[in-house]
Amino acid sequence: MLFKVWEQLKSYSNKYTQPHKRNRLQRYLFPLILLTILISVRHFFASVIRYDTPFLTISFVIILSAWFGGLGPGILTTILGSFIIHFLYVRPNFLPYEFESILQMAMFLTAGFLISVISEAKRQTDIQKDEFIAFVSHEMKNPLTVIKGYAELIHKQGKIAKNKFMAEAGQTIEVYADKTTQLVNELNEMTKIDSGKITVRKKEVNIVNLVKKIANEQRTINPTHKIVLKKTTSKKIAVKIDDYRISQILINLISNSVKYSSPNTSIFVGLQKNPGNIIITVRDHGKGISPQDQERIFDRYYRTKDASKIEGLGLGLFISSEIARLHKGSLWVESQPGKGSTFYLKLPR
Ligand code: ADP
Image (tube, rainbow, N blue to C red):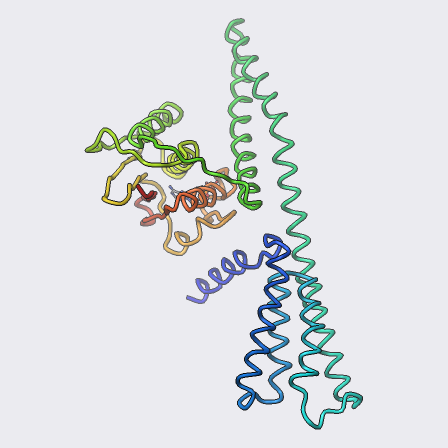
């Protein structure tokens, strides 16, 4: 129970402590709104507010502002907060030059400053980390394309020259270049989500054909598993979607089912038409996912413990749920450990 609460806390702090994702206007507006609320509360509830409340409330506002926006908003709130304390809350017998008052104010300013500096340090680290990921994932694309091209050539030449070693070496490089490209693409998509650059271009698509096409392609790519497309009642269901992005989700779900279930097991892909939406399902008979993990697998970088031996970055489901959200749809999982998992993608019609 305690462990679950701890894990949940970590997940929330990861999700919500990200000041580097907010723009300057949001970062500075937030403390100004909080301070305005504080002044209004003081104005309307003056009779019930005690004299020792201001330090606590303003310290709380500073912590919130620094957490939300980093150094600038934190310092701004500290300075504005000290003026507000002085002019709005100060006790009638308050002597600004008394040692106790100076000490209190110095402690208040130091705490505000420290909190702001610590938040800014985290903000800067996150900015640098994001820039680094964006740079590396962008710069790796071209070399990988060249490696893949030459690997294909070696593979083909090896076959023509009946050189088994050359053909196998070429093919192996090709497979690993594909895997690396997949990881690099996921990193790239994540940086696009962060910078708000991920876009969906919707057009009317027959989803029955799209699901069929992806299932067939995945069947060819993954001969180790039996990918079964369940029969749908309609031949045509028109939905307004970005077919490239929705294909990305389906590929991710099917390849996850392949990755996390044993060879020769079946993977069922289904499509269900409802009055206001459609639901695509991908069901496997693999390891399954524990209830605690089911809540977290859609988080960025989250991977279950038993997935650590299988390659992956923990980004596929994060990107997929972001794409589903951009379509005003949703993505969720139902699973029983040891029995398999079913992923659901719901899209409005
Ligand atoms: P990746 O597969 O690259 O690790 P994902 O975001 O696609 O990243 O998945 C996150 C985690 O969810 C995986 O690491 C795995 O632990 C779990 N997972 C996803 N799909 C399945 C599945 N079909 N069966 C069991 N576990 C799964």
